[in-house]
Length: 305
Image: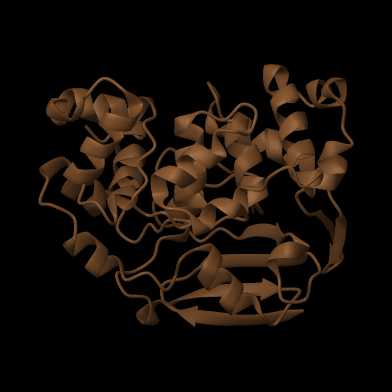
């Protein structure tokens, strides 16, 4: 086992591990105490979180287990690889300058309250294929159920990884998941999302297209590229852009952000998704609008107003 610490003092703008992982951005982590998404207040806390990175995302080209928890002074980690600090920095965007990002956000009172409430929350940078599948499963679902779907997919189809006396499971590769039938996926409680997941996995496995291809595109072109996957509309595409592909300007227009627009920024409602998206991105400051979106999403979902 490899282990170490990342000092919080090295992270500009602070860090909140629990808010980052339990804010609805990612469904690829487990909480060791079994209480993922159960807390009434997602702030602070010292729980251990665990994930398995797919082989395509690691320098070793093998799946790697990462564990992390936050103390008063550091992010402690245990891992199957000595590359854990770099991997955690990438996954949890520990190299983002949160102070500069907040300073670049327009002075909007409700957004400021959201930043204050969840100080230190960062965006994630999930592996693209697992992120894509997670958000295909997210339609009309509570975060707990989305997380449960991803956990079942990993256990049923993912590669087992032994670490520290336990067996973990990586999220399935496109090839592994493409072998599942629609009926198989319905048995895992994916419901009407089952054919979307099966067909999307098949598209990636056969090389028809990949979510990674969007990285090299301009943002709105990237969003359009992602909508070719079955079950992916503009909102899901924006989630993948923001939480995996590094388009920090993306603002997914989910229920909570549409509520914020109606209550606080009605001038941004332009009718179509594309035009409303452009207007709220500009209102939230453009380059880092996705950060403002994620803080507002969590703040409103947790009853902040």
